[in-house]
Image 1: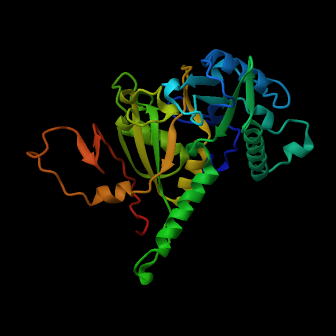
Image 2: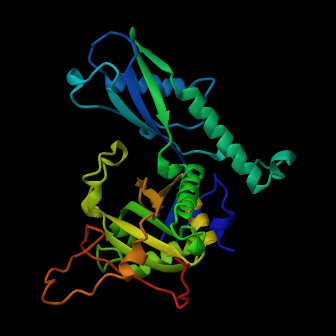
Image 3: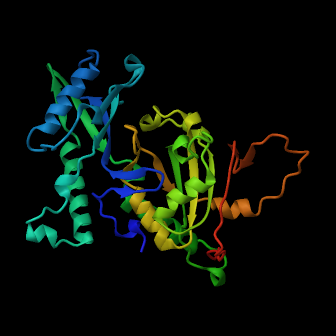
Length: 336
């Protein structure tokens, strides 16, 4: 059984090439004005007040460094309407050790993985509920805060999304005789550093072999594809604005079975990618393939050498500066 299948929500997962998946909770914060004042926003003061609230009872988060909370003022505050947000932020809770069973506690040590998972989701829901809609009073100026879990961190919501997608596709099929239940098998990971997937002292571009070896720790792979993540630069996502697209790659990984796909998705949700010897913690974006990337690419017409002088290619309307693929010997595909 793959290590990802037995992974608990609060356990790290070591990967090849000195990488590891570290558990953490990530929350997206949005701030609004709660009164009629038009005083300028002090980001440092807002962050300090929120940190004090998080560290004191009733929340009492055990370990919360200043660097795990970021607050950023949104541009053009004077032009914004009163109901529009004025600032955004990201909160990371990286120390989840207090949720793990403790030695000597017979009841905790006897917990099953399912019970531990239920305990984690109960704590997460409770924390979000306590933070949602709170008001911060900064020297007489009130701000209201909303909280959201990123879609790529919510495994349960993501699983429901692909179940609903394929259920509706099955019901909308024109030919009832050919109705076949389908399930996803491909994950998409973006925003990961290219150098971490490259061959050391050989190239800064991600290596197919290294990437295949890393993701094989999550399940048996059928095929994979790597490309530059040029879309990050155009994406209007506050959480990803600090990522430089030219240094990151996007990876499609197709697994042999649905169980391996699900275990890999569950392991990637709610974790950061870390590398031994580096202090960088990468919050990648993970989702599942709705478009059938490999199925469509399989039927693409071959390009002539004269008609494509550039090394780059276009797939699904996206420009790929380089792409590579590894296929296993077991070539049986899911029924379309």
